[in-house]
Length: 251
Image (cartoon, rainbow, N blue to C red):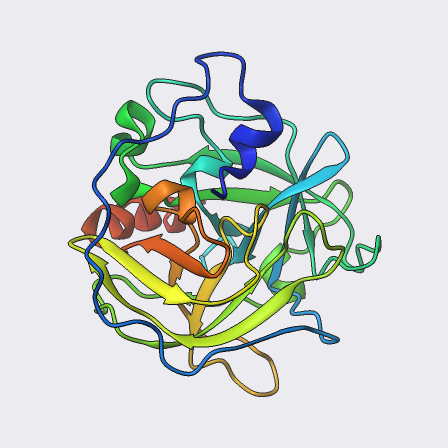
């Protein structure tokens, strides 16, 4: 179970209770699957750090201010009436102890009300902003960004990139997502263990920039699943679109 931030902190504020929901229906599994460690590090994808340890994955999504991160809600907020985490930093393209673009302070985290109030697994999506002290450039102008698609359906050929806690580099999988439940997506990708929560599901990445359109993030059912070879995402619906527009219209 990829309960990344809960496992790191347990938040000690409201306890560590998981969501209780029915098992998603067993529909068609993923198609082509290939997972490998990568020697190329996408600057629009990185890992979140807290107290010196990385615990979740996040990615840069396009926004007017150019500072917007996308991850799982449970990486930012305890849920069930809990609180937002603080002191998080983001390291784009992190690998082998090196942060080639430095560390960026994460602030203004936002999750849907349904997650904050009741840990609704169908709303396990969160946004935050990232800035670097002394740097006048926006994060997006340096790393590039994926576009965000909401209401785009469940079946997609995706590239999934995440940072397992036990590794100092990301793993990458190419698979096909399908529908697991009314508002849940699923993909078969081996080796996506704790720490990969928030990993973006990217459609149509450009072969040169590796940037594309993100349609999901690891999260949702059981915080992303209790099997490292099958990952879940909350479906990006109107709740996600509304929250994204709120973050995009700042400035």
